[in-house]
Each structure stands twice: as structure tokens, then as C-alpha cells.
Image (cartoon, rainbow over all chains, first blue to last red; front, side, top):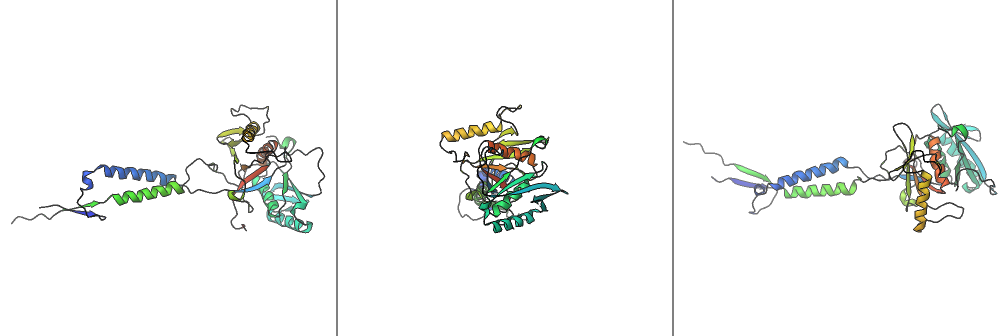
Length: 158
Length: 171
């Protein structure tokens, strides 16, 4: 009695089956292993955003002969209160969103962001994210000059 | 009367299409995935900024990426291309750091790029060389300030702070 061989997946030829080529199964196993490796290591490429800023050249130490500056200077102090960052804008304590509104109002009344410069001071334990929020607000209202007032003395030491 | 044995049928699976499918899947994973050591390989929570821009909108040619990382002892280091630097040291101080100080490394990079003609000084003493600073959201300002001051001392004025984007606030 003859043994019938039925091929699954198409193919209608008389070429000998994989039984004569056992290495095919090992090749498939290798392919599977390589694929599993890439599946486990797979990670979508993520694009990171950046907030561009312009630093004063030479450091944050003020120039002994400051150039004639016609811009109005806005001072903002960042500090922690109850675990949250707060902002002192002209001695008034505000939140981040309120600060953005106040800056927008100031710029709107002053005739544009190029008429202002912002100086940011902060406590040593304030998080970077809180200060970056000020940069973001300045960028939003097109204030190009936004600099940091560095910590001094014991506050700057570890 | 002898029982007839039923004819057995051997079913063979054709492996050739299976190999094609696996090859296609492999190519997809290799092209779409991101396995290489990239500038974003250090996982950190970045601050949010609604005004942040993508790399296509800013100058990223020859950009240097500096990452502020905290070690297991809570000490912060500046990492550049697998080099680790202690923060807050001037040119004269090398506090047990094999790679030298950060400011020295930056100055060396600037000299190399100037020799190649890739950068030139700006009019007011700053250098038009983009630097991307990856600073974690929860890094204390004491440490972040040291890094930013080092950039300013090296006259690298064109800084880009890495951030997440607030999708809800994006214009």
C-alpha cells in the first residue's frame, strides 16, 4: 500500500520533501531565535524635544562694565513651598500658570518681549523642572534674554 | 478476514513561506526598532515644556549632548559620550577624575572643531556650537547650575534643554 504524501501550503511539484533536507528545520529554529531576540530588544525610536536658550558668554558673573541696557528687567525667584514650586514675581507669590499670565500681561503692556530681560534666582533645593518652567514661559512670550542668578557662598557648596 | 490497515497520510508543512514571513518580521524590527546606543539611552524624567521644539527645528549639526546623571551615592556627574566628569571643577582641579575636567574636555572639543572649520566665535565672544543638556526634572538647581555655568564659561552660549512635550499645550 502506498503512503500518500499531501503537501500543505501549495506547491505542486515532484521535488523531494523536507524530509530529505532536515537542515531546513534547524534553519527555521535559528530564524525564530533571531526574531525572538529582536522582539525582546525592540523599542520604538523616540524623538526628544529641546527648549533652545542663549547663555551670556563667559559665565553668569556680571560684567564690571555692564553695557547700556534699555530693557526692563524682571526678577523672578523660585522657591519651594509645601513641596511645590512657587514663583515670586515682583514680590508676589504665584504659581507657574499665574507666572505665565503675568509675563504675558507685562509683555503685552510693554510692547513686546524684546523690551524685557528676565533674571531668575532660586533656592539650592529647587528642582530644575521648576526653573525650566520659567524659561518656557519666557519663550512663549518671546523674551529672548532669560538668565540665571547663580547661588552664592554656602548655598552653592555641597 | 484480515483487517485492512487504513492508508496513512503524511502531512508536510511547506517551510518556505514561513521563512519569508520571519524574514519580513525581522527586517521590520531591525528598521523600526532602536537598539543602538543613542543620545537618549540614559533614562531620565525630563521637565515639560510646551514651547519645546523638535530636532528638525533647531541647529543640531555637530551638537554635543551632555547628560546630568546621579550615581548610586546620590552624586551628580556630567556624562558626555561615555566620559564622566565631576561638576564644579576649574581647569586646575582634577579631583581623582581620569578623564580630566569638564571644562578642559569642552575646550578641547572646541579647538578640534575650530581646526576643522566647523565652528567660529560669535561677535560677542560666544561660540556657535549647539549643546544639548539633558537634565532630569528632579535634579537640584545646585547641580544643574554648575553644569550650565560650565557651558557659559566655555562660551557655549547656544544651549538646548531637553524636555518632554506637553501635548495638550502644543500650539
